[in-house]
Image 1 (spheres, rainbow, N blue to C red):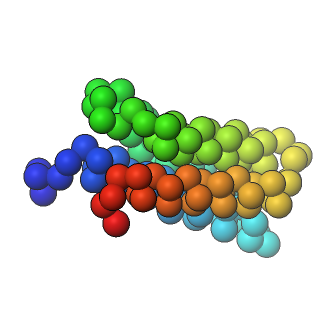
Image 2: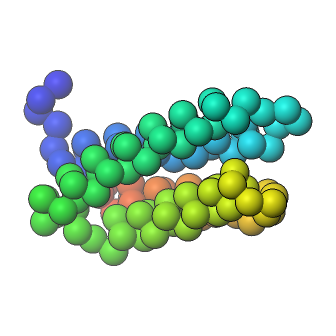
Length: 116
């Protein structure tokens, strides 16, 4: 368990972030969603992201353009999710596009790390 490299650990974090973002998208686009569940999942996602930020800040080998691109994609998705949750801006097409961008940046990141 403790023999994972920083790259393996951050990929695990990013995978969890992406999966939780997929869950929040599915929750907010469902016909009747449980707002408490969405907020809880969003908070969990942000907590994982904060851990990943710290991991990347302390490991120079993680400070790559691909890592930055994933964080940028996540931050834009997160901002748009908040617009959907807390304002009357239900632009689900844009939110889905942001989720797709996260997927693309995650795939580019895994390819750059040569781990999967």
